[in-house]
Image 1 (cartoon, rainbow, N blue to C red):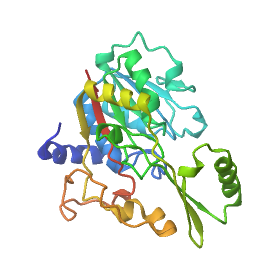
Image 2 (image 1 turned 135 degrees about the horizontal axis):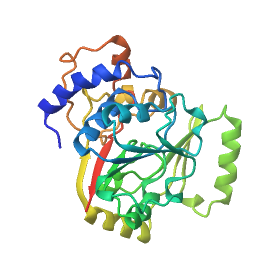
Image 3 (image 1 turned 60 degrees about the vertical axis):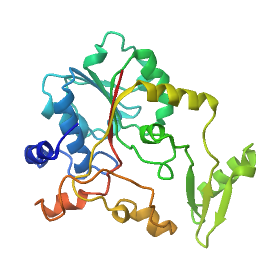
Image 4 (image 1 turned 135 degrees about the vertical axis):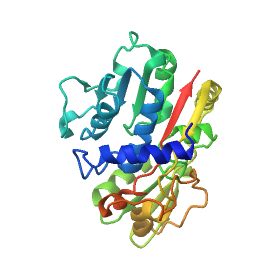
Length: 290
């Protein structure tokens, strides 16, 4: 979708905007890598209507308004109390995206941004029934790195294998897991590894005939599947530092990302922005459906 010269040229423009972002510490929300991806995709798609599923503090809403001043924005979050940036001309909604009627929107000019930590498999019927065509999915992680299906897994025909790590010191979580485990009809297929400090739980493949059929139908409808590249070379250790350090997880050779836009020494950023690079990047993608 984008050549490197376009991305390099637009990064300069993006940084002029991003340095004035209202939320400097947007932990759990979009940071520099994904904000730049969204910036470029918005300029390319130019939607007249944007549905933002997942608002958090409001940084993404701010960026959308900076890039597309005349687009109508619907910002959805089941808990809107975390907002630090609020606009009078944005439609804020507090129920799941599936609970609203979107029939009046021109689907050719409407973009959905999914940043709500909901399994993508639960969105397929909604997308099909409403005939949406333009989608951005934020946490588009591969198998073994997230607990739900993402477009990447579906597009690459991966069966979800969920892993969970629970420290013994977290008594509440341990008790909750034991109760779930004893009630589970699949407990014979759940693998338990007992470390000195934590339990590692590996669940069986999460798939069935109905899911496979829905995934097959989705792949047939995909006209464009595009993963936005990281700004600099992806650093797996930095991205998953917490889980590697806390749970002794080895480096994954199966985690593949696009080639970076810049070499590490090719781009000049402040120390503050350097810290943001690679700590979030999650294969954010754009999908266009027929």
